[in-house]
Amino acid sequence: MGSVLLALSGVGCAGDVNAAELPDASAEPMALADVPFNPASVVHVHAIGGRPFDTCSGVVIAFERVATAAHCLTSDNLEVDGMPALVIDSDAFLDIALLDVAGLDRPLVPVAPELPDRAAEVFVAGYGCTGELEVRAGAFSGVVAPPQNQIGKIEIRAVSCHGDSGGAIVDVEGRLLGTVSTSNDFRHWTWGAPATALSFMLD
Image (cartoon, rainbow, N blue to C red; front, side, top):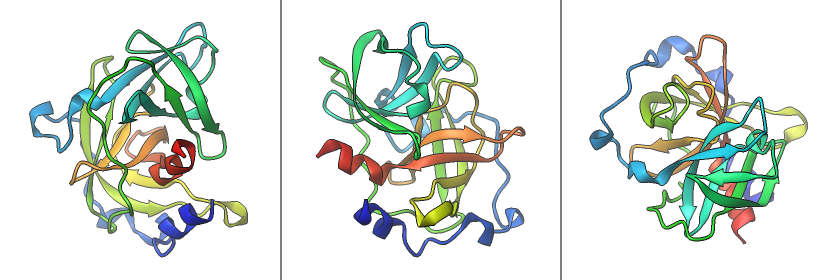
């Protein structure tokens, strides 16, 4: 995991950024024609019989490969947009997983090689708030410092909902920064697993 830690080094802690320095998170979804990535890259992940997290989101990162949140793997019977899916790898600490979906041919979202500057515009995409794909704009805050110097989750000021878990966090160049993990009770802060962790799962 050393190269992932290197990719995130120098970003600092999210606590270094005062919320007043970041724009307010908008609950209004964007027009899909205006987002910097192909919306068809974001998929619906269903863990059949796996309540309470039976419906999540995911993002295509390679041919027949979908990234999602590890906490969405609540059943062995997984589907992505109605197609059977198998778990290739998962990391419960970071809350990220990679799925194999045979026959899935969708546009992919490339993984960003590094994180953006603080307050940079980012986008959260998922099926959580309404059951339909929605994308909301937000701002990058930083990396949450985890215990024991392990890899930290990324933090953004953006609205996300239950069901957006595993959805895409994307930069202005249409590159994947991470996958949605959780949000706070007021839903204007969202935390995600860094997408750089996926490089180890794809090897």
